[in-house]
Figure 1 (cartoon, rainbow, N blue to C red):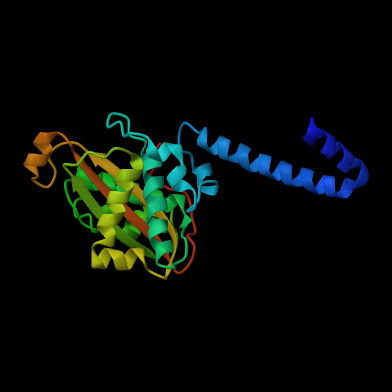
Figure 2: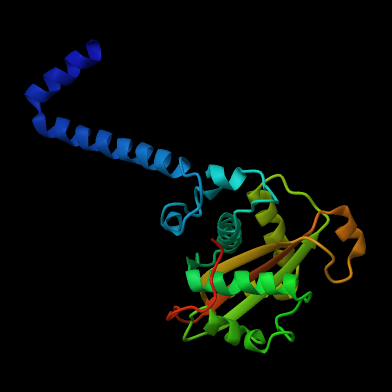
Length: 239
């Protein structure tokens, strides 16, 4: 009652100040509601790239979910790798890259191809339509490709969450000088990431295949110098 009484008196004596305080309260309520709405999401959607950011992504609940290998949320995993990649750049004082959906389509399909076609390379010698990065960019609907690319593979490990896997993938690139150079490129403008899980014999790694842990194949695609100009994509991204 004491707080109510003070507020009531304040309204009578200084309505402008009260209005200002009400605005502050409304803004604070909006922030709380916004956080609740984001955390209440049950599945990753592209709209969340505008709400989750480099400052709060490690608190985002979905990234902490355990990975169900029978039902992998690839869009969520790709997003986790995207944010960890930007975190690494930010720690070096570099610009935060903009998410670009066509680059994600390009990256995810290359990771998927590496598993299905049993190769590990920037050049797909087993599919002429996807041979070079620029070929894959066009299939993803990118009409002005200026592509930088990192690829990675990991097998024989079990990860507790999507975020733990994303950290491991990006750490692998950071630990490799040529991949680190691409990740830290000052010419990069936009980014899309794609990870695919392949279960079975891959690259003659029989011991890992027998363990049943599978292989995580990952790709980062950067657009350099200028933003992507996108047309219609023949390839599809993860659902």
